[in-house]
Amino acid sequence: DVVMTQTPPSLSVAIGQSVSISCKSSQSLVYSDGKTYLHWLLQSPGRSPKRLIYQVSNLGSGVPDRFSGTGSQKDFTLKISRVEAEDLGVYYCAQTTHFPYTFGAGTKLELK
Amino acid sequence: QVQLKESGPGLVQPSQTLSLTCTVAGFSLTSYNVHWVRQPPGKGLEWMGVIWNTGGTRYNSALKSRLSISKDTSKSQVFLKMNSLQTEDTATYYCTTGIGYWGQGVMVTVSS
Image (cartoon, rainbow over all chains, first blue to last red; front, side, top):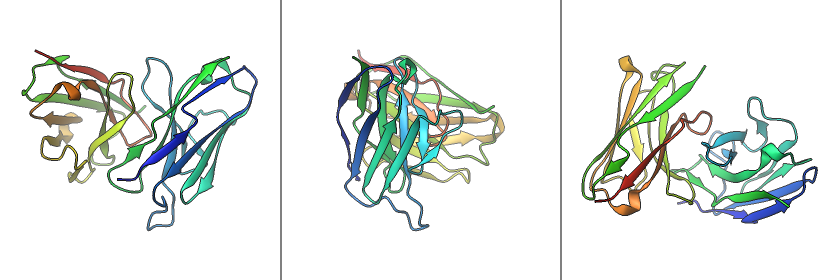
């Protein structure tokens, strides 16, 4: 199985601050079609996961452009510019290139 | 508007079989794949399996011997059955279109 390693496990931030979360995979996430199926999800407290970014850098519907994703092959980053209160929760990276699909362990974003 | 909603028993006895239903709206099961993902309390996400729009299935090998996913396209329902439940199977179970859209989840406790 592809192991997804997320760092840091938690972040304490002030509103308005910018933060980055890293996700590294144990195998390349480039599929045979040339696309990279690495995604970012946010799970707000008590809620279902919500897709923020798909295929490395594409913003999901309704997701503010304060969120951005970069990376390639095995190394990916989610950046949040100007954190707002609604951004708090657990962030997961997920790969859907290889079976079984796997998730990172999560990064908990908290208010300082 | 795409919607998914899980339903099923909140409590299952050890060694028994779990049966869950995912009822979808806003799309046809002949066009979308539906996945099941679970999350133990306070822990991360585990992909369980998928039923393709064509009706084929693929399972996480860690669960394959216990898991079955099927659907009734005419009723817009997807079914999960997992046997030989143990306390470690206590989790919130989600159906999802595969990252993009998620149900609200159903909490299942395995206990006598």
